[in-house]
Image (cartoon, rainbow, N blue to C red; front, top):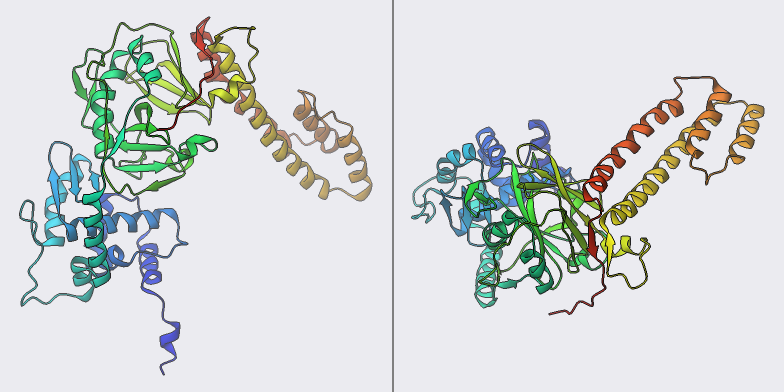
Length: 476
C-alpha cells in the first residue's frame, strides 16, 4: 500500500487551493473566461467537481457559476441577442454587453459548436483530457438524472401566479402609471425567465415561505406605457406570497459581484432555490392605470406592507432596514415614496380611534422609527458595556470596585443612559481619546442616519392615511 494515497487531497480541496493562488474573484462570466485562460484543465475540474462546502462564499459562487456553464454545454443552450442571455434547458444567465461579446467564442471552445447547431464536440480521433470528457459527457449517474428530470419537467405544469383582488383595486385607484405598465411587462418576463429565485423574503411570519423572482428585463416603462431603457446596474424583483400571489415588484440595485442578483441579497433573503418548472403571471385583461393620486397610501394584506407615493416619478427601491424601503427617483435620486413592511405588527403599536378604518401614514412610520431606534440602542448598550468591562479590567482592584458601584447607580431606563455611561468613564479615566468616548461620538451620527429617512417621509406623508381594516387571507 502506498502511504501517500491516504494523505492525498480531494479534487475539491485541490481546486480550492488553485482558486486561492489566483486570488478572490467575483462570480461573473468574465471571471470564468479568465479562469479558463489561466488553466483549462482546472476549469473543467472546477465546473465538474466544485469546491469544499466550507470555503468562502466567493469561491462557492464561482464554482456554482462554472457548473451552470457546464450544464449549458452538456444539455444545450442558445444565445439571445435581445435580452443578452444564455438560455439553457432549465436555467438562463444574463450577461453584460461586454460579456455577451465574449460568450460565442468561449462557449464554442467549451462545446465545439454554436447555436443552433450546438451538438457538442466530436471526440472521434481527438486526444482530450479526462476532465474535459467528464465536463462535456458527464457521469452515467448524471446522465440518468438528466433523463429523469427531463421526463418529470414535461409532466409538471407551470406555476400560475396572480395578483390578489385587493391589490388589483389599489392598482386601479391611483398608483403611478409606470408601476402598472411594468407589472404587465417586466414582472411577467421576470417570473418566466428569472436569473435567480429566492425563498424566504421576511425573517419571520408567513412570508418566510414567500419567494422573490429576480431578473433583468431589457426594457423599463414610463407612466404613458412607452418602453424605455432599463436602469443601469439594476435588477427587477417580483415578490410572491406562499399562495402564489404577487404583491410587490420594483427595480433594485444590482449586486456588484453577482450579475442578475439584487444588492444585499444575503441579508434580504433566506436562500436561492431551483424552480422545477416555469412560472406564469396572469392578470386581468383590462388592467390599466388611472390618474395618479398624490400622497395616496395602500395596504397590501398579502405582502403585510404599506405603499406610499408622494410623486409618480419613475423610481427604484432601496432597502433601509427590515421595516423600511425607500423609493428614489431614477436619475435625480429624489425621495418619492416608501414601502413599510411588517405592517400588521407596527399597526398594533399605533393608537387608533374607536371604529376608525384608517390610520395616519406618519403614525405607522413613527412606530417603525421607534422600533428601529430601540433595536439600535440595544446594540449600542451591548457595545458600550463591552468597552466598559474592558476598561475595568485595566484598573486596580480598589478603583475597579468604585467604578462598578458608579455603574450600577446609573438608571438604565433613562434616555441619557448611554451618555451617562460615557460621562462616568470620563470621570474615572479623564481620557478624551478613550474608546468609549470615541464610540459615543459615532453613536450620535448612527442615530441621525436611522432617523433621517423617517423624518423626510413623515413630512412628505402629511395627513395621508392608510386603510387598516383587518382581513382574513384565504389560501388557494
